[in-house]
Image 1 (tube, rainbow, N blue to C red):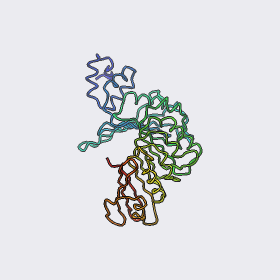
Image 2: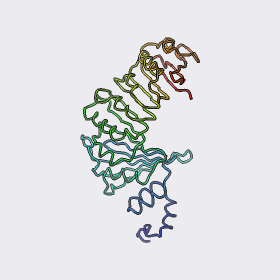
Image 3: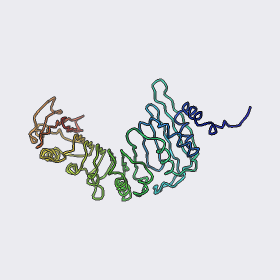
Image 4: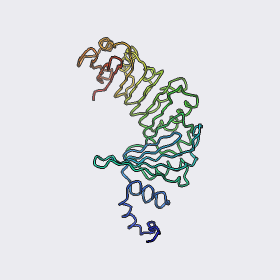
Length: 333
């Protein structure tokens, strides 16, 4: 019996590639950390990544999805109450979670890796360099946990297609707003999808800060101080709003402006809000001079409107559970 390790890295290139093809995704990524040559070898495999998400918080995470298989890297940092202001810190270690979600083989494997002498930024750059998603890189930013400047964000993270900016449940601090502003400055011109969670809109952080982006999708969850009029400043194709309050008067004004030609890129708008009264959907339709297409009940109405360019749109109005109002606007193709 010998305790010598098999000299895998000394195998001829063609034989080493054949052996690598028999390994799983986690083993490939572990191998990529051995050297620049190993990293280039794994990169050449062009692993079939379907989704790649970076979560920027006190304990950063990187999640990579391969069809039914997912791998999560959690960078374990020293605990403290300070925000992360740079990406130069060394993780204590890296927890790796491998999940196979195929129906016939549901299993999870946990392991702990050393930090490999890499900083947080180097871990992000390394894993991004060997994994290229079919669509876009995505990132979540917890603004209470981080305070990264624009240049650090641009220099370290890849070109992002999707970003989520997550505010704390408590009232935002000035540093939260600054952190959110930096994320938008760094990535807004290139991203396709933006999600805002628990955003408190104010003078220094409003929908107008997002208006310059050519977005395919904007989703806003559990927001406060959201004004429907501000949606007029957006240049997005699809917008989803979940807010604490709204009114049919505001929506009527918005759709009247759409009929006159505003928001020409808008293809879909969905808005949900809590209400104490049953909305008068019939009056809403009459104000917009809509043509009724379906009337299911008092709480569910459908009608159609047309703008000055002869573009038609369907509006679907519902009331769920007596307290959640729902309006969906969809342009007819």
